[in-house]
Length: 332
Length: 259
Image 1 (cartoon, each protein chain N blue to C red):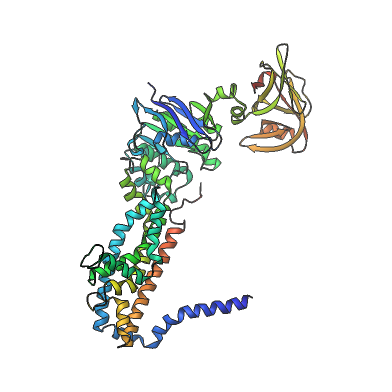
Image 2 (cartoon, chains in turn yellow, green; image 1 turned 180 degrees about the vertical axis):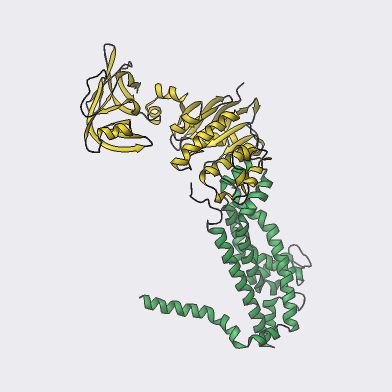
């Protein structure tokens, strides 16, 4: 018996959300583009939208229960803190706060109003309020989306630790693959109301079921036609470039290569790598201690140190290189 | 063009201000205060305050749940109900008065003995003033963030607790503004009252009815009552402005953008 078992069917504006999901005492992330029905999954579990099907928690059927009778801890996207109540008032609304303020390090804010708090503090108050309810299931809707990038990194680490410690069946909705990979044991990709793939983040990266999953996981997706050449497959891309892969495929494919597997050079290197794309650098974007460099249709991620050494600038011609073993093929 | 518009605007504003100014310029403030001591004025003040207080109590007690329902539920006949709420706004007061008589008069639909009693004043005032409260209250409840209601429910709050702990406090300043508007409208009520309740001193003669009764006998008393009503109205208008700004401006409750 799974701690949380869902088999839902909800009519949305242009499609129907159909989702079957089982979760133990673990965190499952639901990722996908906006409008895919991610938040609806959480609202259906909480009873805030009418849904056909089953919501079963620890063996109990919740389908016919009103929201207030379901034992969920819901952290809303913009936190939905009650503006007229203090932090303590917010947390105590759902149940006795106990030591939850101390546990989340917000006891010094007990008398503050939500509007006086920073984004990170609000996030902790929202979580504390959800936990004071002593829920059987935790539902987090974009818990990090309202935060600036710096706060986000800190809160992500805190939240991950808190979720591990709680050991509740938890669903996290996010549109960010990095957040999903950091917070959850398993990641499900929801597109147009369907779960296209569910697995550990590294599994999704290693063998994406669709080009969408690959792109979501941060991969370059290159469309082309595959032909078997002995033990290898050669893929002719739409711009006539030919890339080589060790995956077997025939016909229309998406060739997927992740930015961290692409190296950059001024001249084609003479090494074991089979794939070289020579093109103009169209963008150079620093991300933390790395730099994302787009060369033609391929984005590479290199260390800031390497970018400095190569003196990468927009408009220059560089060679992007990756191995045939780093080229995953998904049949279309 | 700007100059011409400025002149027209100045004329319009002067036209609106002149009658009010005239009340205070016609006789000295000392006379105004002295004339308010007149028994007719004093009795009318007592009747007005009593009936207004009861009428507004009625409006709030019946109007608040109605407004909450109209703001939060979608049901068949909802727009019909909203239109009905606004009907007294467009109804001529004399029609309201005759209608109340036809409904509650001795030979009316419900044949009660309410007509020409102080209760009739309460009913007439409540009838014409209620839309001002209910309309504003519907808007105030609609303005309560739906996510907060959802949050309260997931935290175990039954609908009654959601209403009392979330919707009511967050709509409070809007409800206050609606009440002030309703109070102002009710204090000035004339047409429906005189038809349904008459103008009997100490019983049904409210301040506006006393102005009408006095202006032939003692213009100064009528002016003094007028000045008093201006003061009331102005205070209520300021209250509405203050409550509205509080309610509409996001400054009080909106989250700041700091990280």
